[in-house]
Length: 452
Image (cartoon, rainbow, N blue to C red; front, side):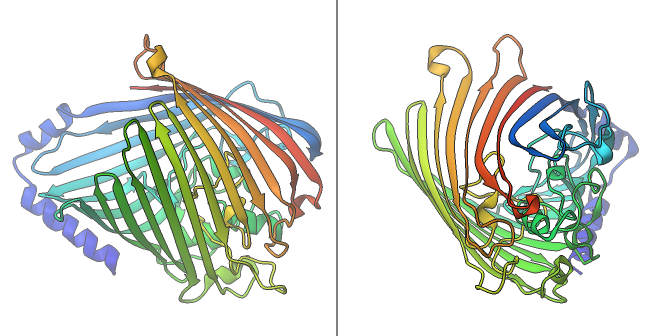
C-alpha cells in the first residue's frame, strides 16, 4: 500500500512538471557523466587449510559508468551501469579454496548489471527518488567492500522542512547483492546460515544470488514478501547528531536502530562519544522459520564508542554486546539479523562480523593518522578487535580476534586517483562450519580507484 501511495505522488509530480519537448530534451544535453574504474586484488594465506588449498586469491577490474540528466522543473533521471571482470585467476575458477569468491559473480564469472535507473522529483524541500538506486542506511546498505556494491529497487521520500532535521519514508522492494556477499555460503550448513544472516547477507544462499534484483524476502529467507518499509528521523546540529530508523520487513522482522554521536572542542583536542542500539522482533508470518528455527526473534544490541581527535590524529575504543540465547537455544533467536548489507556496528572488523551473533561481547581499538601536514594526501589506520563468543550462538563458542591496517593515498599529480593497501590478520579463528578447526590467516588487498 505504501508503495502505491509513493508511486501516485511520483505521477502527480510528473504531470505538474511536464513542459515542451524541446525543454525536456535539454535535460539530456546538459546532463553529467561520472563513474569509477576499479582494480582489486586480494590474497589470503591460511595457517590451517580450508578445503584443498592454503592460499586464496583473485583479481578483477571493473567499476561503473553513470549518467545524470540536468534537473528540469524539479525532475531528473539517473542511470548507472556496473561491471566486474576477472583476470589472471587460477583455474578452475569455482575452487573457492584457491580463488577468492568476493570479486566476481556466480561461479566466479565476470558480470555486468544495470544497477541504477531512477526518477528523482524535487518539490521545495521534498525529494522523491524512485527506481534502482544505491542506498546507504544503517540496516540496508551498499556495503561497497569489494568490486561492486549492493543495489536496491526502492521508493524513497526525504524532507528537510524542519530545521536541522531530515525525515525519510520509503519502501524497498528488491535487492541486488554485490560481490562481497559471496564470501558467505548460507546454504552450506546451519552454522553458515546464522553467520551469513548476522553478517549482512542471505541466510539461504549468497553465493549464487549476486548481480540480479530479487524480492527482499526471497533474498533474505527464501520467501517472497511485501518488501521492507522504512522510516527515519535524523537530527544534526553542530557537534550533535541523532538518528532513529525503523525497518519493517513484512512477515520477517521489525528492526529499530538508534544512534547518537556527540563531540566537543577543547582547544586543539576534540573528544567524541557515540552510542548505538538495535532492537529486533519477528512479525507477521515469521518467515524466519525458513532458517530452520521457530521463526521467533527477540534480540537486543548496544554499543558504545569514545575517542578523541588531536589535529591529524584520531583514536577511539568501542564496546558492543548482543543478548544471550538460552541454554537450550543455539540459533538466531537473540541475534541481530541483517540480510541486506547493513553493517553499522562500531566493533566490526575488516573481516570479522561476529558482534551480531547472540551473546557476543566485542571490543575494538583503532587509531587513524592523516599525513597531509607533511605533504602527501595519505591516511593510515591501525585497529584491533576482539570477540568474546557465547557457547549458544549457533556458529562458534571460541573467541576470535583480528588486527589490521588500512593505507589510503591520493596522488596529487592524478586527480581522482585513489590507491589503497589493506591488511587483516585473524588469529585462532574457530568455526562450527569447519568442524571447529582452528584457522588463522593473513590477508592483503590492493585497490586502485579512479573516479571521474
